[in-house]
Length: 317
Image (cartoon, rainbow, N blue to C red; front, side, top):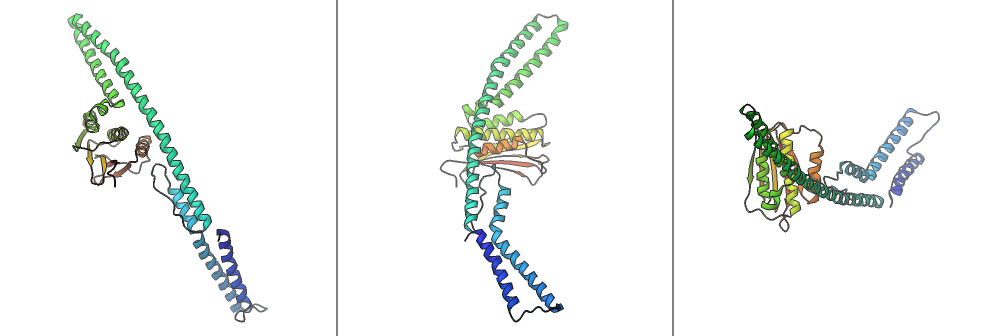
């Protein structure tokens, strides 16, 4: 029976019962109206309203469940689906909604993959430009300053040496930026070495990153390793820029559940219910690309824990 006929039948049943009671010998209405009769009619109306509310609540319960699921649906948090139960129309509506979520999430993953690939290509292009063009120009300036310092009078030699040192520091910073844009160590030495280098790059000036990386980690796809590296990079950047933290632990381990888990914990002030920015949304989108789970939680000490779980092919439970 459709939802319309179910509600119609329930309301019609109430009206029929009320009419039968009015026609029965137990309920009479005289003229003028007696107080007792008015009370009986009022009570009857209240009972009908209460019964109608109960049956409508029961009949529309699947619609309310669907509404709550729709309010909680998030394309960056897959897995939430509405329960298909109730009348035929509700089952069809829930099935359509779940199919729409599946389609939207598939399209989101596909588009995110294209965007991520374009971003990585642009990062590699910028890294090459910085290394080949700007880096070579700074190297040439450094050599010219060295030659000038050797030829300059003693009173100018100190200033030229200072300019030479400033140029050398700028060249080192340029190389660090190029490494972050294009993690060549990830391609050459693997995820563990890349994360160690990343922790070393962020350590300094009152900010310490301690890494704990398991040996003998299972092989992951190149895409999964790149996602783990970028998530770690974004988490460390957030801890350094926004969390007011001075100590961060970076752990990479192979768990018994068949996943490789990356966790970054800081001792900062936490996120304090702040809205998620573009960086965190980017981490969630990257996690979706490889079927990983990303969780961002407050630690008991008051800091923040970013945890990425990447399933190992053939091992994940």
